[in-house]
Structures are given as structure tokens and as C-alpha cells.
Length: 264
Length: 280
Image (cartoon, rainbow over all chains, first blue to last red):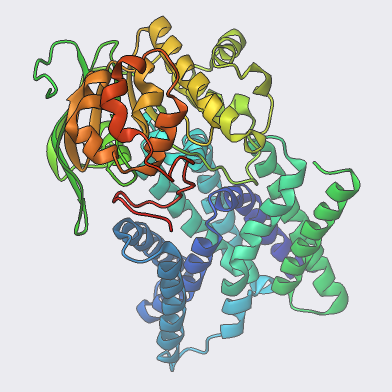
């Protein structure tokens, strides 16, 4: 295997290990569209990174975090349904990102790479980002696990029982923003949500506890990444989409497997 | 009878609480106090602000006016009106109950079983939460509230989703729990006659306090009959619970609640209107 393939595998597996457990909460909390909105805003971060001449990952993380906080703040007002609000922010941010990129005459931007991922171009620095930030995300998630699960089950009940609901919610959204910014490198802005929710959804049928589901989702994500990279090499198709297709195949297979084993 | 301002022995006290949502006034100048070991029921039609008042008292909603005081160190067991857990979250009843207890204080096996046994749901311990039926879920929620060793139980429509026969059982269970644990109870209900035996005092709410006091007295109060006289659901339940016993002496005053000709069948009214209305 070539170096770039190994780097791709390392980055992809790193992202899958983080997005699996976090993706479980996205699925449980029905926040798939929220994740989508965050990822759409990532392009704005890339544009901002170029314009300000800062590290692109830092730019992306910063914009994702800002959008996440804005969403949490706006959802409190509740003048619009959360769904509509997310739609406006997701596509508004994507459009704004595209407009901002068009101002960059001096830089040639590989738009397709950002939209659909360019995992074969990941650098050692990217991998360091994935594992460094990923370790922090997983450590924080482990600390938050119990209260986050409690507010996922019933926020008001958790509040009465002493869980600092708002703080936990904001912390989770920030984690999600970081993961979106990292996963973007692997599958691109338009496919990030799939890497977050599909492994988690596929893991559901094999899990009896939340922790089992988080672990299985991480494993499923790794298998999807490895399968996608292999498939992309074997058939010469783009890698990001191949990874998502592999995840979908896993999801379908998990459905078939559980149907054959007589449900559950 | 206004809630006493005597604060000795109170568990939780709301004073002059007002809440508005946009232009809609949900609560206006509401007083409510629960004292030690006392059961207070808030009744009122849909949209009267019952749940809002409970949420203000729990600290879930910040009131626009008024104050809420709690006895320092008060432990509250809360039973929300409904719970919806996504089907993708693998969670057993056991795990659900374990959230009730503060960190590092997982309840012992005996305690879990004892509390579930007390509410008559011991057989559910290993069931997935999403497969528990409506009536069973109310018991599981009650068990979670009890695991907190509450000084105060807050129950929002505890009989929601329970069939009419089961409702009486559930209120009996709540009465028994209160007697055995000696905790205060703050309860929300649609219907006075169902909770009559399980409560010491009643607040009749419709944005503001219409009347308050002993359940028998409230049932005779003009503020109550005005509110419920034309309210079909209350009337339907009043018929159902018209069995001899505690209602008999109140027969005369309950007359306004009796059905008029042609309305003897409990109307299947699912609408949220608090106004008198017909379903022709």
C-alpha cells in the first residue's frame, strides 16, 4: 500500500472512532439535521481560513462552533420551528461559503475536494489534528456520558434531578462541531452527516446498552472507512462517496442480519 | 381560602407567580404552597396553566413575576406528564431508574426491586423502556421519583394514558405512598373527583386561582362550578365516579355537574378548548 493510502486509512479510522460514539447521541437526540447544518457551515470556515490566512482546520472548527452556539441560542427563542431554522442556517451558511470562496481570485480552491472529501490528500498534520482533537473529544464525551444520557432520556427530569442541562447541551454541541470539522476532511461537507449517523444506526441492532451501541458504532465506522478505501482503489471511484456507500451497505446488512435472526 | 403565608413547615411555595408566553398570559398572580406531608392538587381545564405552574415551581420555567421558595435541601421526585425516548436508544427500565440516583450512588438491587415492587412494576425491570405500555410507564416514572427519597413528589397528570379503572388504582397507590413515605405531594389533575380521596387541598386554576381549599369545599365553590359546569370531560368523570360513598353528601351541590338531557353519554371530546363548546 502506498503512503497516501495508509494516511487516508489512519485519518479515516481516527474520525470513525470519534464519530461513532458521538453519532449515537445525534441519532438518539434526533439531531441529524443539526449535524447537517453544522457541516454545511464548514465551507464558510474554509473560506474564512483562506481570507484571513489562518489554518483551515482552525477556521473550520471556529465557524462550526460559532454556528452551533448560534443555533442553540436561536432555538431558545422558538419563534420558528427548529427544523426551519436549521434549514435556513444550513443553506445560508453553505451559500455564504460559496460566495466567499468566489472572492478568492488568488487561490485555486478545490471545491469538489471540500464538498465530497479528499481523503487521499490528507497530510501528517491532518492526522495529528484528528487524533489530538479526537482524543480530547472522546475524553470530554466520557466525562459527559452519564448526564448527557440523562438529558437525552428526559431533559426536564434530569434538570429536576440536578443535571446542569444547558451546560451539558452546549458542551455536546461543541463536541459535535469539532467532529464535523474533522470528519469533513474524510468525506467532505455534504457527506459528513452520513459518517456520523449511519454507523450509529447500523450498530443499533446489535446493542443492548448505550455503551455497546457507541462501541459498535465506532467499529462499524472503521469497517466502512476500510471498505470504502479498498473499494475506491479496486474500482477507481472517489474515496469519500465510496466510504459512505460502504457504510450504507453495512447498515442494510445489519437490517438483513437482524431480520434473519428473528428480530432483536 | 388563600394559601397561608405561614412559612413554617412549607416545602415549596410560589407567590404571585405570573408567566406570559408572547401575548398569551399563562399564569397571573398565582399563589401555591405545599407544606410537609401535605398533598396539594392543581386542577383546571386544558390550557389553564397547570403544567406551567408546576414547571415554574420546579425551576424549569423562570416566572415573569413572583417568586418561588423551596425549603433548603429539598429533595424532589418528579414525574413528568409524558416521556418519549427514541426507539434507537437501547435502555432498560433498570438503567432508566439508575439515573435517578446521584453520582456514585447506584441503587442496590434490593432497593430497585423494593421500589418497583411498591408501584407494582417489578416484572418490568429488564424490559426495554420503549416496550413498556402507557399505564406501566406511569408506574416506572413513579418508581424513579421514589428512588430519590423525595420530601416532595411532583406528579404532572399521573394518570395520563391510563384507562379509567386504572386511574383510580393509581391515585390509590399515590395516596398509599404518601402515607408510607410521609412526603408532600404536588399533583396536577384534570378531575377533582378522581383525586378527592388522595388530596388534602385543591387549587382550582384557570390562569389565576379560581378557588382553593379542601376538596369538598372546592367542589361546592362557584368558581369551580363555573369552570367545570360546562366542561364535558369533567362531567363524564363525575358520572363515572358517582358511586355511593364520599360523593353522596355532596349530591346536591354537584347537581350542576350532572348531565342535561341528551348529553348522558360521555362525550368523546378531544379538543383543547377551555370554553364551553359543543360538538354537534
